[in-house]
Length: 397
Image (cartoon, rainbow, N blue to C red; front, side):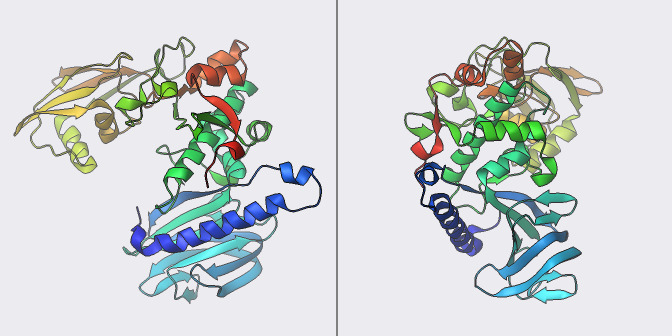
C-alpha cells in the first residue's frame, strides 16, 4: 500500500472530479429519459504496483497531465510503446523526464491505453512511490470495469443466468469497496484479493452482455450495499462471514449448498516441509521459529478449520484457519476445509473446496443455472434476505 498521507489528497481530488464529470454527463439532456439514466460510478483499480519499470503505449488521441496541476506534459495521436521508470526527481517516459510524482494519461474518445500487453479503458495514473517504484491506478466507470472482470471470475460459456448473478455480485462487491476505501489509494486490486480484472483485453461478448443486462443492479440489505463476497467452490456449505471478515449479516451466515457437487477442482492436495511453512508464516507476519508439529483445531459448522495448531521452539500457537491458508498461499491451500497428515517427507494437506467460502459459490451458481434457476433465484439462495436494487437507490456518495 502506498502511504496515503503523501498521495491520497491528490487521488481524492481526481476521483471527486471524475465523479462530478460522470454525474453531470449522466444528467444532461432535455428529455425525460435522460434523467432516468443510472448515475455513473467511478472505480479505482490498482492494476500494477511495486514495479521497477513499465511499458506504456496509447492507440488513439491522448493527453498526459501532471496529477496535481493543470499542467499538460504531452499530447498526441499515437504513443508507441515506451519504457517508464521512476527517477529521483520524477518519472521518465522514453527519453523525456517529467519532474512530477504522478502522471495521468487521458484517452480521447475510444483511444486505448496499453500497460505492457494489457489494454485498458478509462484514465490511467502512473505514480512514483517513495520507494522509487511504480504503481498504476486505472480510473473507469464501474460498468466498463465489470466488462474486464467477468471473464476472469466466471467462464464466458456458462449459462447466462450464472453470468448475470456473477455480474450483480461483482458490481455489488466493487461498490462496497468504493464506499469503504475512500481514504485509501485505490478501491480494488486486479488480483484474487479483490476481483480479477484484465482490462479491455479480457472482454468477451457473453460476459459483456450479462453486465449490460443487469446494468446498475446490486444487492442491498437493510438499505445498505451488501458486502457481496463470493468464491469458487464451497464444497457443500458456505461459510459464515463473521469468522473470516468479522461481518455478521443474515445474508452472509452460510448455508448448505448441494449445487457444486462434481465441480472441477473440488478436491486438492498440497505438501509442505516444516521449514517451508515456517518461512511462509513469517513472511505473512505470523512469528514462527523451529516448527516441529502441526495439528487440526476446531471446525465450524461448514467443516472449515477455525484454527490450526503449531508447535515451535516457543510452545504451541493457535492460528486462525483462514489466516493459515492465506499465509501458506491461497492457491496451495485452496480452502480452510482440509485434513492434515504428517509424513517423513513433509506435511500433507488434503482438502475440498476453493476460496474463503463466504457468499455465492460460483460453481453452485453454475449448478443452479443448469437446473433452470434464474439469476434472481441464485442470488436469493446465496444471499438470503438481500434485495436486488438499482444502485441509485442505495449509494450514499
